Length: 231
Image (cartoon, rainbow, N blue to C red; front, side):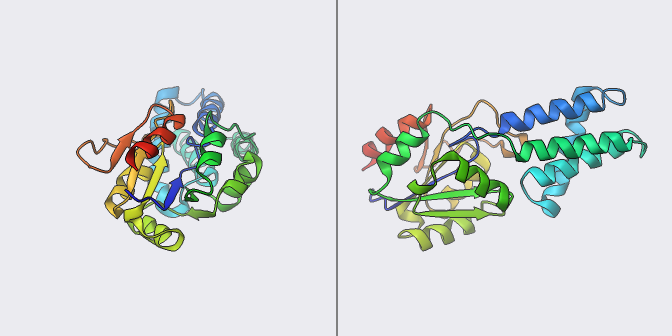
């Protein structure tokens, strides 16, 4: 293998993300406890998120709008204005949560920087992703940053043709099988799955265990030995 470019996912690969959504969802459930039980609310919220991806894309703003939509539905259009205000406040708090860099992230990026072109490939709201990258302290370790609306095989081909020598000589590393692994393999890249304890249901998928270019590691720190072993 002759790798020239390595892509990294951001949320729940380099820093914590899903845990803050879960805390916000618990806050949402408490606000609507008089109207629906927590499990039912979670199911309805997930349905709304799936419906709204095509309209709002990925990120906190779409999540907040989906919470409002769900609140309207489960209350039969009678949700109090005060509850809507609290949901909006929860969304703003989510946009301001502190960045918690995951173990090994800085070390791995520092060791790989200079040896390969290192590209951050993340999806979601532009302002929020830029904020998290700036606060993470990792920004200077990347040769390029790509904030995309979704991660598809076509996106990976375009990114690695722009920032490397094409997908055949590239690797994508991330926690989502749906977004970081399957489309990267379809594009012709190597793909490394780094599982996280919390993964949004929309990102679940079956691992492509029969794909020659698929690998899984227990944590991000194992990526260095994996890349050395594949050389």
